[in-house]
Length: 265
Image 1 (cartoon, helix red, strand yellow):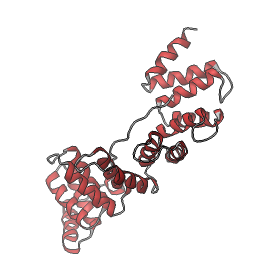
Image 2 (cartoon, rainbow, N blue to C red):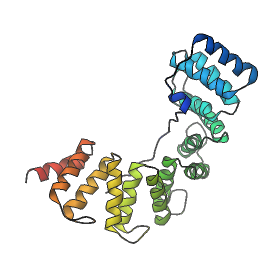
Image 3 (cartoon, rainbow, N blue to C red):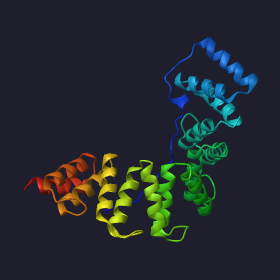
Image 4 (cartoon, helix red, strand yellow):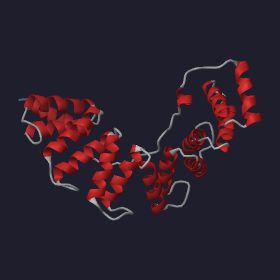
């Protein structure tokens, strides 16, 4: 009924990076001068972003470094992702973690989450579950949905923290409120199973439905089952078929199998 999957590293895109606006070559020189002389991280970031858009990655990385050294969290995070994935630079998980740490210190909580993931998996630094939990908690409390999801998994499994269905459900619900689709599904499962709260089929249905609205295949599958069985919602075979079909369209294999069975009737 549910799926457990440890979330992977998050790519953070700042408003500046997401912009398609370009500046002239003369403006780029002026921005670079402001970055170099006035130590303005916003200008350093803009120069780096422009160079990256132009495919001039050595120059882009140089200015991302300048911005990061001026405590620009998104620049540190961008460098962390480049080094983690080995894009345009030699892959170096240790250095990636150092940049994520700088991003976290600068208040970018996506970087805190990524650093926590590296500690949990022992990638580029010594495995440290306690540090991972602290970083996930810091990120979750600052609205990083994947961090809340990972905390929920740890509480559900009793991994590093004391096993607690109540805490797991709380974190799944918190992540779901931040539109983390799989967390909505898992919160639905826990309400259905009576784990962390009294069993409540209608609450389970609501969480499954939100998961499906966020295009999570297993969420649509569970909505389909609820309609088919008449639990949490009135029995409706036609709606069951619709949701199982959507689950299949979202590549959830059990949805395809069950839709095929219902479609035969």
